[in-house]
Length: 76
Image (cartoon, rainbow, N blue to C red; front, side, top):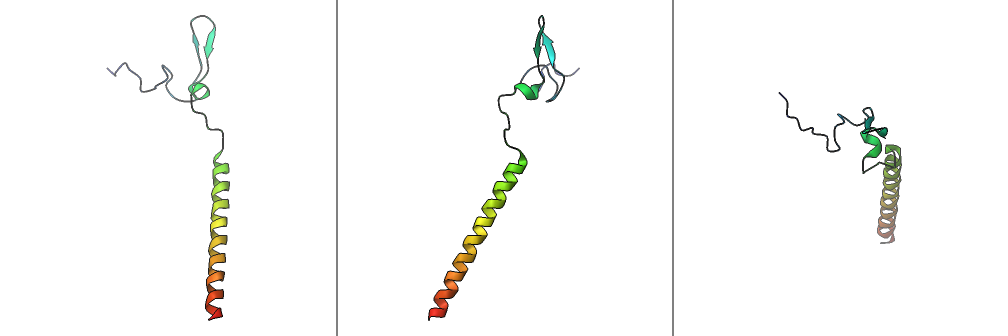
């Protein structure tokens, strides 16, 4: 027989996105993903966009430093 304790920290729901349950009387508890403490507010697209912007700025800085270095060499 399986262990009676569930690995779900929030109670009797089996997995995130499962069905909601009715608790004593007519009180409804929605699926786990809707009442978890941490909720993602940005999509992955937001992360990718900020990563792209950071890469673009780094490349721009590298180009500027390369131009500056070559200008110093030409001066001598």
